[in-house]
Amino acid sequence: MRDPLFESAKQKLELERNELVAVIAELAEDLESASITVSLRENLMDVEGALDKLERGTYSLCEGCGRTIAPARLDELPATRHCSACAVDTAS
Ligand SMILES: [Zn+2]
Image 1 (cartoon, rainbow, N blue to C red):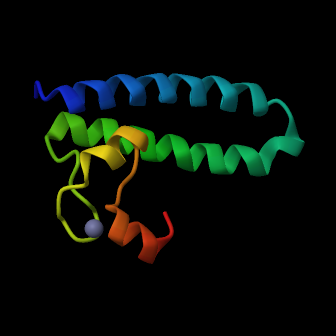
Image 2: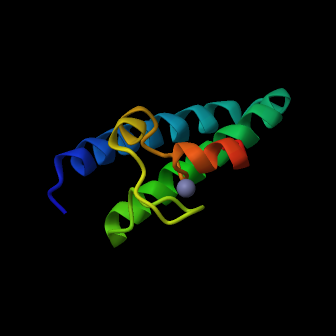
């Protein structure tokens, strides 16, 4: 997969994953941060899911309607699982 969009998405996703892992590890020591950690973990799952899809070659396909997600949206939100139309419906 040598698509430049995918290459840049992969770099952004790997960077985001590393940051999330570091922040979660830091917050895990503080029980009051538990609820923040939950949303960060969900974030991390999306990031890892996107990296997984890059590996499998299904990256950029909307999980809602199966259509290709617009490159501008992927550029802005590399870990998104939905196209902008489906994101409105699912609020994610
Ligand atoms: Zn869709």
